[in-house]
Structures are given as structure tokens and as C-alpha cells.
Length: 75
Image (cartoon, rainbow, N blue to C red; front, side, top):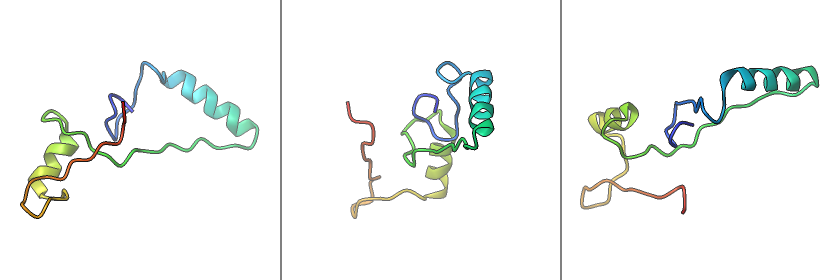
């Protein structure tokens, strides 16, 4: 992920050409590459999934009405 943002790709640490070569190597050995996402959405005004979630009112809230925010990347 790019900057811990879901639905993104980090092209610096995972150049697409190297990932494709790795995938092909795995495939030739009977393996598969499985991509996963971290289900946490960072709070960032410039991040479309976060903004859309606010607009659609889909986030968990405390009983007082403010957004519940958790930490998933300690340190």
C-alpha cells in the first residue's frame, strides 16, 4: 500500500515489473500471489475513500456521535 492507504499500490517498494516477475516465478512453481488490503481507512481529507465514507455516513461512532478512531499501525 502507498502510505498505508487502502486501494493503493506502493510503486517505490513494489515496482510493478518486479512484482510481475515474482508472480510469474511463483506461478511457474505452482504458487499464487494473493494481494490483501488492510481494512483500516486513514483519516485524511485528501483521501477519497475516507471522504466518501464521511459523505455516506458509514463509519462507526461513539454514542455521543463523534467518529470512532482506532490505531492499527503501532509505533
